[in-house]
Amino acid sequence: MSESKSKRSATRGGPRPRVSGVRQTGVHAGPRYGILGGTFDPPHLGHLALAQEAYTRMSLDRVWFLPAREPPHKPGRAISSAADRLAMLERAVASDVRFAVSTVELERPGPSYTVDTLAELRARWGAGVWMALIIGWDMLAYLPQWRDAAGVIARADQIVATHRPGAPAPEGEVARLEEQLPGLRAKLTVLPAPQLAVSGTEIRTRVAQMLPVRYLTPDAVATYIEMRALYSVVDQMARGERGGEQAGGVGG
Ligand code: ATP
Image (cartoon, rainbow, N blue to C red):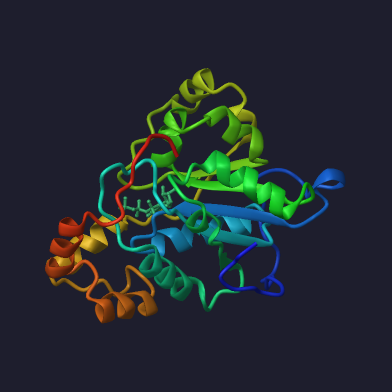
């Protein structure tokens, strides 16, 4: 696959508490990968903390960050260019061997439906790889609207979700989701991850208001944003004028 960087092996820092499950044998004798898709406009500490928590608690061998070419759940929103989002993501994970970037969604034309991505990753990685889809609660709540949500559940070996500040998680929500998507609960792990109230939206807003974003995103990303004048008022006007990379369609 066209991962944007290759890494030899993940560092293991002592015993890793597991949320559930045992290391797979047989059909899943290969590596355990986490898959964290998103717009990453820009990537921030919320993404990295979520990936780290999944890596540790799910005993993953690597977490792959997948920037979406066209995020189906953000229709009509102008987003930064794929090149800028990829460059920021590469800088965000560069110093951490547990993480890597995959360009599989950027290479595929059209909306980046997760069901297609999982099928493509399975074809590239083979049956031996164990794949955990990592998502924040806002995305989990929206799962019934994803393109072929049943196919997503069938293709992922595990769905790892975490609560997120600002994303309501009403009691009984998992039961309601299970009613709409039978089989979800059996594959769902809810991670007790750190609650960092940071989002791409907040960072873009802060930059436009000329407020600092250091400590909300890795320094290398903050520097890139500044260097490219991303999210500045001028950039926002330019993106509005040219429409950015308009997302379309429905479903994640
Ligand atoms: P935006 O504000 O631009 O809509 P975002 O910050 O929500 O973006 P995305 O790139 O859309 O980021 O998110 C990718 C994935 O990371 C989603 O599953 C999302 O729920 C999750 N995520 C993003 N921020 C956080 C956070 N602070 N805590 C936990 N999960 C997060």
